Length: 374
Image (cartoon, rainbow, N blue to C red; front, top):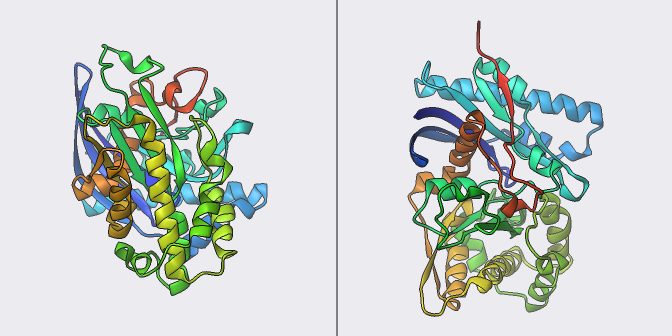
């Protein structure tokens, strides 16, 4: 079977909306993909402020923003279709939306970007709201990419995504039973720590959107007292499955850093080291002294050369090396996997695994909106 799908991802780092048009081929349960075209559409300052302040709105104004953002995404997709001449080629749209509230302990998560509005604008079928069913089954609702990683990248076992939040997926080896997606011990995944969202907030102190290549961080020094405070935060001692809300980075981490009154360079250097150490800590239980293991790194953090250097230095101590794939996969992996999850939802197959999120069962998550013209 062949599926031509657009996937959308708006990450917590707020660097824009990633859009990928992907051709999937499925044969006897094996999936192949080709990213036909892709783009990252940066947010205007107006939309940046709207998304940053969304959690402060009244219930009415929040719902209005949810609708407006959906229509905005729909118009963005139409422009993408026009630009790449995709008319009559797209069979489905899968939109993650932009996460605002994520409170799994209260069985609640929400992503801005009304799927009905996207469907109305594009006149195409849309899958949205991909996390809510897992949350309803008492899961963390995150991460939701591990199933896509398993199906699309079968040669690898460790996947690190460094976006606004850094998260890890571990596909356990030696477990290749047919139809084994329901095996509760097959995939481990969890959020490690806040990442680019905090680094970007610090970079704005120098009137920069982000620390390109980690140049500012490389000019700083590690503050050991701050590093110790960061590493002692309670979240890191919790067992997985576990997930983080954006507010962990913006409301807790950032303010903790600012309490130390350091230079921007020293703050960035220290926080980059913190990220690298927490990634190492996450992988220590999988240390194998007799085998060098590879970690695939994607997300915007893969382009932060200083951060990558610190990660590799730390991981080399536990016999891991990093692998950074081609740029399209680095940048658009989450949009690619949203497209796959939308396809799985359309096929009424599992989209989220309980072994990853801690839910009471696997789930076929996502609302379907049929906006096709009669």
